[in-house]
Image 1 (tube, rainbow, N blue to C red):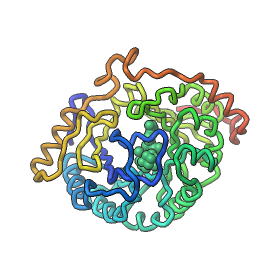
Image 2: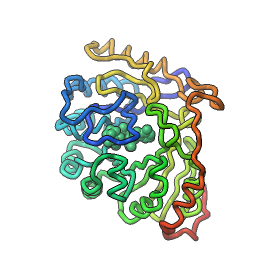
Image 3: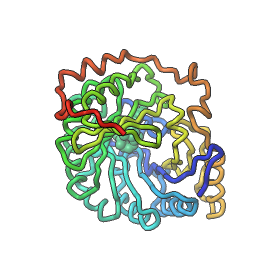
Image 4: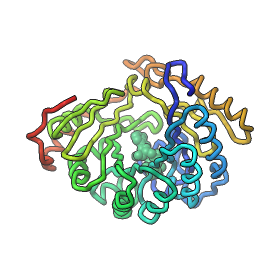
Length: 340
Ligand code: SAM
Ligand code: SF4
């Protein structure tokens, strides 16, 4: 197992299999590599099935225990099942983050290839708002979520990016998740570093308060001290990496770009280590190098968190509270209280 200078073992690999995407989300960071490419754009740069397989094999030698595929939109690749099948032979815990629009037709074949779980990005239950944010249609995404649950790619985690336009819809999303077996919800703080638009960031205090007031139970994860809000049988988690040194201190992930560069941190592009064309020994060296050079972004790379360049003007937190109230309380709001 390889551990960086900050004592963080690297156990997870997040591999971007393409830069292409059929959506055009307003906030997309695309792994920090600039705007996504259109689905039909030339893709000579993309990693081949064999290249992914070799990266995973070397990662496993160094202690990688889970692999997540991402993009761009990974399902624009027709050979994703092959990629999953070759990966799962080496690292059984293989999952995927997708916009869900192409998932309905392939959930079963992906499951058969060995995929274990899926995250589907879904920012709103309202088709118009969904389109305004993601520049794509909600209906096929809902079909994709249903198919994923049906074939057992569970728990299906829905990712909702928390920023100005999505805050008011959180209660409806919680209701949707509670009403469907096999779903969990991750509320992911909008990350402005790679896309600018700092004015879109919202203070999460109002969201947190709404969750605390409406959840039937609040649990605290040991790692990150992250809270899990239970709404009946389902769980809602708030992922808050921005200016959060504890988040970075617990980061065990390195990334691979669609061109095959190793990348130590989502927020940085000055740490890329190319791997294309390397023999196996040199590839091992590339892994060692990216891990040696790895630094926690907040607390290591950005040390002055009080006045750092990522300073975010906060939107008034009442945005969340006032907007949330009319959408109705999830059942069980009165039974809250248990914490651990
Ligand atoms: N296309 C796939 C999708 O949308 O799920 C996978 C790639 S996407 C880059 C991975 C995840 O990052 C998605 O859940 C997306 O919503 C999230 N994301 C993209 N830009 C973001 C940003 N600026 N802040 C927070 N999350 C972001
Ligand atoms: Fe970016 Fe994913 Fe949206 Fe595509 S679907 S634009 S990759 S966040």
